[in-house]
Length: 273
Image (tube, rainbow, N blue to C red):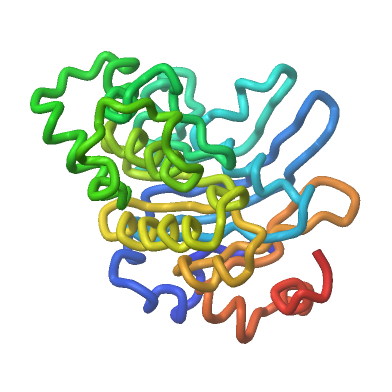
């Protein structure tokens, strides 16, 4: 069963911003060589909401999220089929520049990856420089992005310190700030808290909620409590030994209290996975 994240009235009433969908997949498939990793996923992501992608390991969640900004194609032998639409346009169309797609649809990875040879300030501005974007007022950009990432108060007096000198949780928020500097419309997060302590996890979750006031956030998580805390919608993926597939997607509250599929109920209740 594949359903849209806005397919029910309960999902649509979660937030006013759900009335407009900026990112959508239609019949998305993914392969690694001959291995069919993901099958026929159709899913909508309303603007300015958080969608949690949940499901057991190996069901294709991370593969799916990398389809959404063309990072899947970095892997030798990787292939895809179907459509990924951003604001109505297919990001895999031959005329589309993948680098431009990744500016609009950013990514934060499981392991924090600041540039250790760069200062905190330089890390925030790195994406702007790599993309050759002409933006004045770098000091204002650094402050604004670090504030949105919930890090400004902690580092404002040591912006010239190495990004690698920060704690794991601070490094992850620095990576979020770096992603925000290029003004993405969507931010993808692949298990961003899996290696962090509870305190750092809480701060990242607070940042995610704040970010959703302006951009769309899609997060892969194995933590059901986290999914219930931060997301407006959830999409449950599963595999039966073949390619991963979407079981159902709906408003988070419905997924956790009254899902349409018994397998979803079993998973969120911790009966497997």
